[in-house]
Image: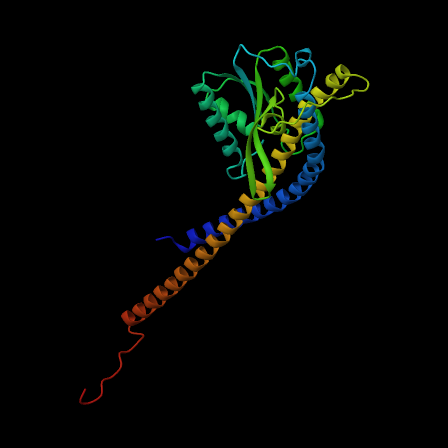
Length: 303
């Protein structure tokens, strides 16, 4: 049975942990507000950019003239960009992204498709290296406050792999932010640009003629790299907000668990203290009786 000292020591430890988790919850909540504001400001622009490029790519006159529109067939290799966080204590945030990648990898292996692995985040990099995966390129220190320059650096490597025809497709695996306690895992293809369902379904839209100013080649050369950068930047912002939300929820659950544990330990401490006091009283009474300090009560006649 635990002694009073053991229970007090454990109670103090749990209380200190609760202070840490409560502080981390408040910090994550503040970071989440900033990350969510940046993400929500980016979403309309990113959505419009993707829709416009899909529209233009569907009716481009000469797709083979542009490296980022040209479809490859030969290597049957994909580049997979896995976006994780740099720190833990975020529940299953990083584990879910990696689990999605492992599932996608099994599917690619079953179909005979090779892949080149690109990783964002220390947690994903550490886990994949521990499992002896061959990580071609990695970027760390980007999860707290990603910048557009970070997305440009990653996009440069992605574009290099695709335009040099080392890979046939490029896809991203990341967490899409829905609410602070809910994220959606995404496994999306960014290259080559897939036409919208409007142009591939049963009710196809008739061909559209576009007038380009200054010209089609100038427009595509400017917008196609920007499209890749925007898609990656949006994924970084979504992942950053998702990570802060997951960490806030995890720290809140940890604080609630600490509160419950402190209540149980306080109850155990009170019981142990009461048992100790009762034992001390019994020992004092027994000692007093042994020394004759307490006389036994006289019996009445007839008893």
